Image (tube, rainbow, N blue to C red; front, side, top):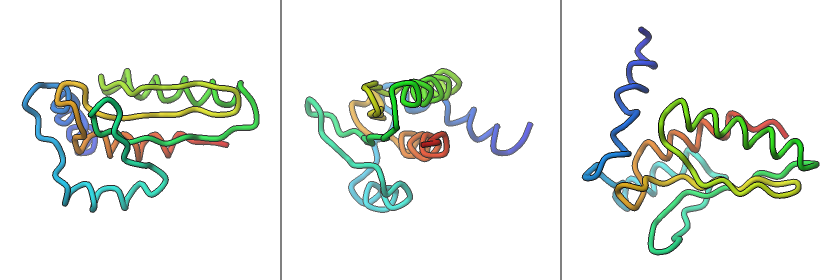
Length: 117
């Protein structure tokens, strides 16, 4: 097993359990630099990472939605996905801790790598 895969599996469920650590304000300021196209937003009192991806049509947005859904299923951690004509809004956060975990930033970066406009 590769070190990356082992690390991914070790991280896989931590964010999804009650009591997992939320990122601190200092960590947020540091981690957000690695994903500059994402915006921290508060929705219903919960801090989330959000990005809107733009496409030329519905089919391209839908294909991206499918890729993000597959990623989410692989890691067992699921974002909010809003699919519209020509765009997909992705919001990552950890439901159990009602906030952001380091894993959310990792998944935001992985989501960026799935983007093919």
